Length: 66
Image: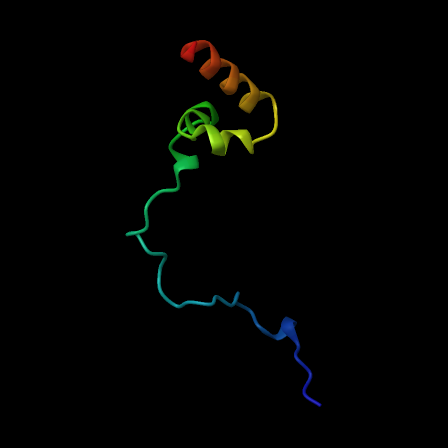
């Protein structure tokens, strides 16, 4: 039976050998605040979000629409 001893390695093990890719887009949550993200959601998407921020956004839309 082969026994794997993780303490023998002095360096961490990484899945890839290359650096992280720089051509990936920045996730929106790193460039936008939560109210901006909520404002960008459709009404159907917003309906699935729980919480006070989503409720405030729904109220803001209701007041602006009518």
